[in-house]
Image: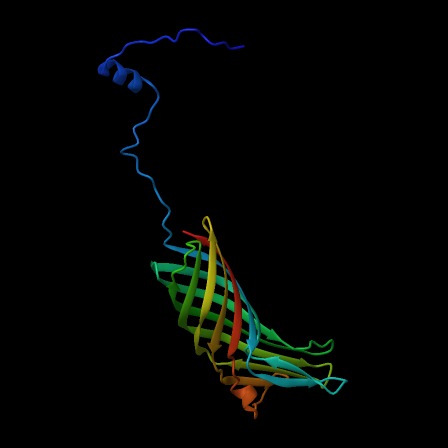
Length: 235
């Protein structure tokens, strides 16, 4: 239990003894301490995209007289991306992905699939926002689509299985991405337009050489509007 003293103890000191007492206490001189601030050079992460193809074609007719269709630009894509911060208002991104499309609606006794690999390089202009943890990016770039293959398996319907290979193709893309950061992690969502066209190089029906007479099959349009989600780690 504490109590008050009636008279405070006062010790007379001069300037030198006062300095000596202060220096003997555990104080640290911070005048020469360097505080390191994390300045990211870029980020790396995962992407998931959902594509709405601009062109579809009929593949199978169903019992209700409606068609099950396939889009050479639609469905989903998944992959990885790396982003480089060239300037506070300029970023360059590169990605590689797999994109696949299937019948809509799906059928129990028949399948169709169009798959391809993609890689993009996109230059973004970063719009300044008041909240430094958020950024809005507008970009344009080019893409390269490779290993473009289509398979239509109607073996249980009409006994035919169609396989087609398409040429590698260049694409152009543009769109906008919104990103928010928490510590060293980034979360993004974007809306982009991709324009690409393919041309068939080989067709087989039941492993026998064949050819397409419809341009929707021989020269399909793979263009789409993509909704993209991204998760990044800054480095």
